[in-house]
Length: 340
Image (cartoon, rainbow, N blue to C red):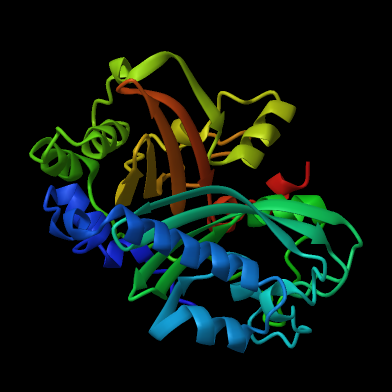
């Protein structure tokens, strides 16, 4: 089973963490041309996945000791493990033979690259035990890559598994043991107020640090509304499918934040380039209030989420979020909320 330990947690003392701490020797040393080369390596890796065998891709792009710390379809993979299901094929090409990944965003800082794309194609083969449906798929996946000497040495992925299941009209196939494999609670990540203290002491003449500071404030104890432009827009909610469920049930006010009164997210890392900031964090709290019609369960949740923020003229202009919705529904034993 692939470990769920966050990629950016482990690099907290390196590229992302140095930025948080205001200690920037590696970022200062990295020339823009190196950053661009890192981007090109990751983009070339994605392009090679379309046609080359897994072994050839790894030999070309992965460095010694490469580690994948989380897979994109982690929850589906965990629940399919050791069940004797047919193989999905390399890079899911057995399940989605016409797979084509459409790049949406790329950002890089130091030795780290963030990439957002959409997986598109047709479900024509077994997928983690789900028989072929013939349906088109179009779902988000994000990756955080760490590079060294022009090779990818570590990667972390997050895919929209909830959206994929909805598009297929499918459920997680039952396991032989009758269980569901639920994401564990890790209690890792950093308290936002601690991150804020370091950022406030960093070099705020750098636009990236100023933008990071504004993003971190959104997770602190008192995020100021003055950081945002008058026309600020939230383009996507982290738990978008659950929100749509709430709208359909006329209980949209019973949001994630309202359902977790003790919610206190923890920051795993911040990646900034120009007017873009990516934040990887964990939504963390106890469901002690209704969640889009789901009665309080008293269960603790902890899920990874990515925020992609855009700034303009020193203000926060747009935000786009993407979280592990299927993981949350597994933790709450509420998979029925995908069926609307």
